[in-house]
Image 1 (cartoon, rainbow, N blue to C red):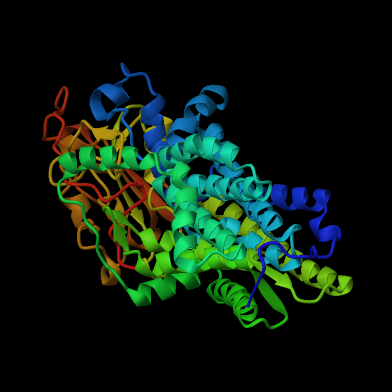
Image 2 (cartoon, helix red, strand yellow; image 1 turned 30 degrees about the horizontal axis):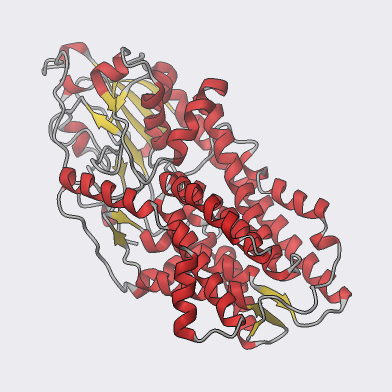
Length: 549
């Protein structure tokens, strides 16, 4: 089933593992993100709103009246740190786009480099893993997580390279800061690197003839340079536990959800096609396990097995962080795919498989490019409303969305946060959870009109229990607490008239902006609202929400 980690003969050499071709494949991963002015990732506007607060002048009305930003260690700061120099050089929106644009190429480079180190050359079947650079967690907008995972894959390739060269002392010294860097970026990247490195070292010991129990011990000892972040994590969880109370782990062995998450690894727009592509990858892995036509490299095959065990054991909510297991699903498939190599060394067969894999990758990129352009155009139509909002205003937002279980989504869940980015406004719906966020709410409207998911508007049949509804939320709106009401993507057929609200912008088919008339602001605007004590947060990633799959 698994071929030796150090095979006696290299896979065939050809255009599919030449330097120019691999560089082209890495650079091509950026193509879908080039055209959109703002990457159409679901949670990205929410992150961008936080970054606007982060880089704003502390004396600005945005920081004085509405939001604070308190620096401290979290195992979830990758893009929060990277945006500081990028925003200074390019501005917030372009700077963030450039950061996001680098994540898929980094992921592609990590996959190809890892395959090269394990096999000696990149094998044709490994190219089938490249579409997973646009996995569902990335499209959902888990930025710090995706950034950390892309770095972790490249770090694992470096780990394999230094081990192959026998430079173990250098590796031990290098991976102390690398482990800390990954932990600061996002805890998941460090954890996955630990699992992959442990699997590789156990296989290395077994290939030397070491008995199983001794291999496990030696493999763990070889990874000791990755242990220092544990001290940071203990300090982080102790500090966050004091702030938000009991840490929650929930939904263990939720098998139906785990199955759906595996099917959703390439979820984008086309349900039948996306699932068929995932089944194709699983079929290749199944052939590799059975030794039919392809076989698996021992190092990467065992690493994929370790990730699968971790995926099975992970709960849906870990340390208050939702979708913990879902995030790992695409990487189980990716590592299993790059573990594959053809049993035959016939060059024309390798060329044929490489051509099919390249076509598969190019097709996914083309469809994603068109899909991202469509979402970018839809976002731009709704963002026209911002031209009618005064700077430093207070905006109540409700984004009309589809049911969470629907395959294709509008990805407008947090589009309202662009009011913070472009107008320095307050809007309901930001994440501000102690122990998981550096953002702090200073302005707290009454009746939970301040935080996520008050901006989420789904059909009644699938609405969230803690989300507000339409038109009830607008009718009950504390008029003195807001200056505008922005109903994003709300269909024209259900627009309504509300006392004290004057429409000042409407989209062609969906979306409407109301202004709260001064004579109806019957609640006084406080000078400097007090900071409201927050309830315990949901996790180490600001995109987490306790929604059911």
